[in-house]
Amino acid sequence: MDWPHDPDGEEGSEGGRKYGLAILAKKLDEDEDFPLSSEEFAEEHADEPIRINYKKVVSVADIFDHVEPTEFETIVEFHRGVGAAMRSGGFWDYHPVGENPEKKRA
Image 1 (spheres, one colour):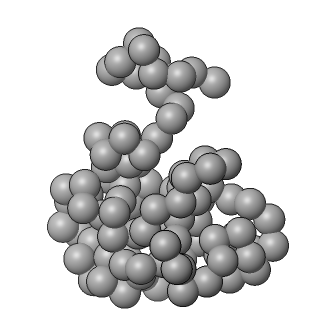
Image 2: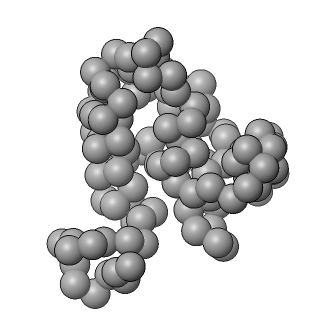
């Protein structure tokens, strides 16, 4: 897929590889962006690449297809809601205790 910018470049990861939720959270200002509409965030960033692991890149839209909350009051709620979406959508390899013991652990 042709991305609007390189997911590993300066715009995508601030000069070094960052993954998943860390990249999404960097798009927000904790003091100014909340409460946050998940639909508006997804529309604004839909085509932007998010590196999931060393070999897989997906769009923000792919992840937000699985986000259930329609609004986040705080950055913590954002992390929880998007993290749950990434797990339910199969975008998260790490499951510390997890629902599925077959998933990889750190």
